[in-house]
Image (cartoon, rainbow, N blue to C red; front, side):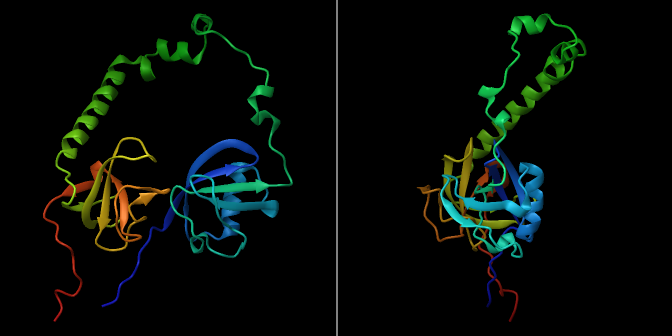
Length: 243
């Protein structure tokens, strides 16, 4: 019997640069070459591919590696979700307008702004759009409240030690065991820690040095409540239908 470790074809990272203080969350295909990635990062950061360096960092800002071979695929480097690509272009300097303390501002109080005509706020109010449409706003509040109630109700059925099936959009259905339920430090809301039956996960039950449960490397993952179903989901064993 042979086993194959399957990982996602994409990686979700944060893009940072010495040219700007803004951070963007982006999703890149792992089969991009470093040179192709530089072309995409040029549009985002303004850094030139010819003088650009890309450093991979952990969430805490610790150096992991440098993407220093233009011909290599980015998937060949140890890049994982939630890491950061720090783009540096030493040939350029950060924009002086990136420091907002140097920019002369035109400021209005909320009262003064409300009195002005032909503003975005007055347009939305006059046309009952966005948050100024009471019916739509009420529907949005009702939708969010129902979603919250549904999650709270489903949370009651998710018990540590239970077998489960995880269905994440764009990924194959996976089975495993519930190992953790509750808050995490890296995202808001309640999350479910799962130990998969096969090495399709992203961690060993810990994220950025904080441990939530124990499992072998690449068997652990954290998923949203809506993507988990507990029930009689036995471990799938290859070859049972072959004699």
